[in-house]
Length: 594
Image (cartoon, rainbow, N blue to C red; front, top):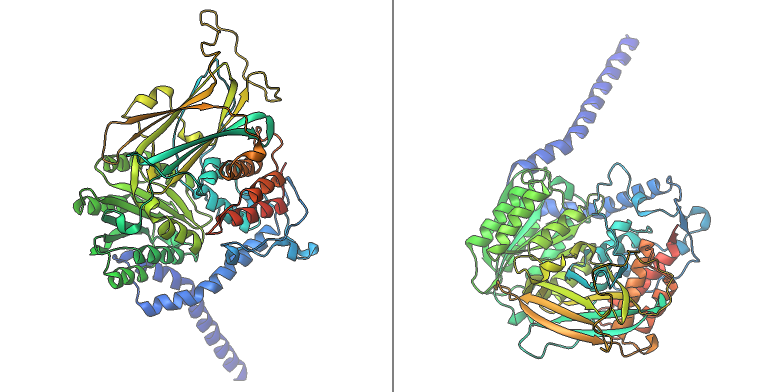
C-alpha cells in the first residue's frame, strides 16, 4: 500500500513539473505572437514599467554572457600596450571597467573586433573599404568626391573600444571620425549657405609630405528660426529590437527630440514588425503628452517588415507635405530588413523616388550584434539625409538636441568637391577617407549625379596628403610608362598655386548647381604653428589610420594622436574632444593590430 501511494505521489509530481516546464517554454512565444499580431503595437504603462525594472537585469545578463564568451576566445594578433588611466569624459558612465583595474590573472584576453560578439549572434555587416592610394598628378590631376556628414562610424567605434575591443577594420570610415567633431570655421558672410577654409602644413606622420585641410561651415540656425517640420518617425519594433540598447534607448532618444518640437511642427509615428501600422497620426509638436504616450507604449516583437514600413512612412510624409518646410522620415532601426522590400536595390530605388519629391531621410542605428551598417549608410546617402549611430543617451542628445538643425534641415544638397593639382608643385596625392564617396571626374559638372547634403550648422572636413615635387618619400608610387603623345611639360611652372579647389552645390529645392573656386598657395607653415583645427583633424586621421593599420600610416601612432589632440583640444564645451583623448588611451591600452 505504501509502495503504491509513493508511486502515485511521484507520478503526480512528475506531471506537475512537466506542465510547468511546458508553460515556461511556451510563454515567450505566446507573448511574441500577441505582440506581432496587433498593430498599432501598444502595451499598458504598467507593463512597460515592469519591463524597465527588468532592463538592468537583462543588461547584466548580456554583459556576463559576453564576458564568458570573450574569456574562451584566444588573442589573435594584438600587441598589448602599457595600461593608461581613463579620465572622465561625457560618456564616462557608459564605459566598461578599465582593464587596468582588473588583476592580470583575471583579465580577459585581447580580441579582434570580429570576436567581440559571439559568432552565432554576430550578424553585423560593414561594406568593404578599399583605402585610397597615392596617385601621380601627371596621370591623375583631378580628384572628385561628394561630401559626407555621417558620424555613425565614430560612435560605433566608441562602442567597441568601451567594450574593450578594436572595431572591425571596415567599420572605420576615417572621414566620419573627423566629421564627428565641430571645428572653429568662420561663419558664411555672403549669400552663400556655407564658408570654405583651407590650410596647408606638414603631415605629422610623414614630415616630408604636406597635409591639406579643407573645411566647410554650414550656416547656423537657432531652433526657433528653423522652418516648420513635417516629421514621420519610422520606428523598428521587431523582435530584433528587444534589447536594452535598442528599443528602450530608442524611446529615450525620441523623447528628447519631442521636447524640442514647436507648435508649427507636426509628427506622425509609423512602426513596423510583422506588419506596418500608424500609431500616431499627424500631431502638432506642442501636443507633447500625446506624442510621448505613443512612444511610451511601444513594444518589440515579430519579424521586420521594413519595406512596408518605409512605404507607409513616405506616404504619410507626402500626404502632409509642408511647402518650404522640412519634410523628413526619421528611421530608427538596427537595420535588419528581412520582410517586404528587403533588397538594397528595391529600397534605394524607393528612397530615390521620394527624395526627388522633397521628402528626405535620416537614419539612426541602434544596438549590437545585428547592426546592418552598410545598408543603413547606403539608404541614408540615397535619401539626401544623414546616418548616425546611437550608442547611449548622450549621443542621442548630441544628434537630436545639440545638433538638431544639422540633423533635420538640409541647407545645400548634392555638394561635390573637385581638386586639381599643379604638377609643377605636387608629384602625388591621396584623399584620406571618403572611399565610398568617390565620383568620376565627369560627374562634377553633371547635375543629375547625386552627391552629399549639408545640414544647418554642419562642419565638413576633408584632408589630402600630398608629396611635393622633389620631396623624398618611402611611399611606392604607381609606375606608369611615359606617354608618347602627351606633353610632359607643366604649363604652370611659374605659378605659386599648389592646387585649386572647386565646389558645386544646389539649393535644397533646386536642380541647377552653383560653382565656387578657391586656389591654394603653400605658405610653408610648420606643424607647430598650424591651427587647432588642423592639428585636431590630423590627430583624428592619425588615430583612424593606426586603427585600420593603414599601409599609409607612416610614423603615425596612438602616442602621436594623443599629443596632437592634447595640443589642440581648445574650447571643448561639450567634452567631445576630451572624450576622444580618452578613447585613444583606451585603444592604446587594448593594443595594436599585427
